[in-house]
Length: 143
Image (tube, rainbow, N blue to C red; front, top):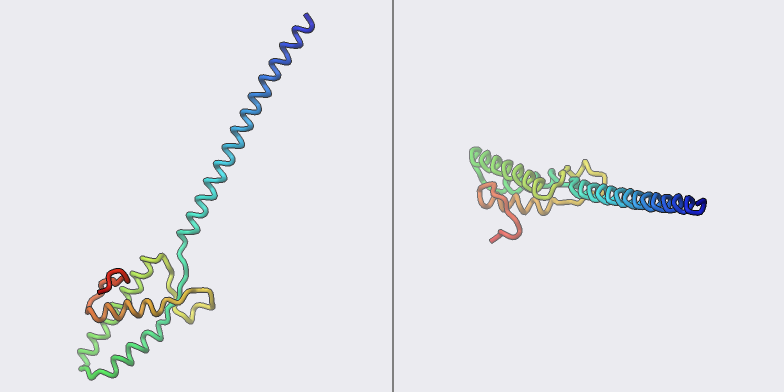
């Protein structure tokens, strides 16, 4: 009888060890899934974070005033042209910022590391000025 009792205890321990192993495997699996999800969320948040770009506002304004100064305009026409330029500039900056998820800083405020988008914005402003409105101009929709 002593041998039989020992066998029953060994079988019970073996079953307990199996359930402990299963529990440990499930725990490891749950931790791995949590780490994977955490990594994916972190990457998604990093990707959504806006990037800083620079824009040479002074250069753009100087170019406009130089171009406008070459024209012989009345004060009323000059005011209308200036207002149209201001509206085109503001709309272009706002559209670019929204489309590209960026923060636009003027060039003197940037020490380094930011991509310069001045030419791209100047082209968009010029297209808006030629059309006489502030409709967004993308590369794909240009005539």
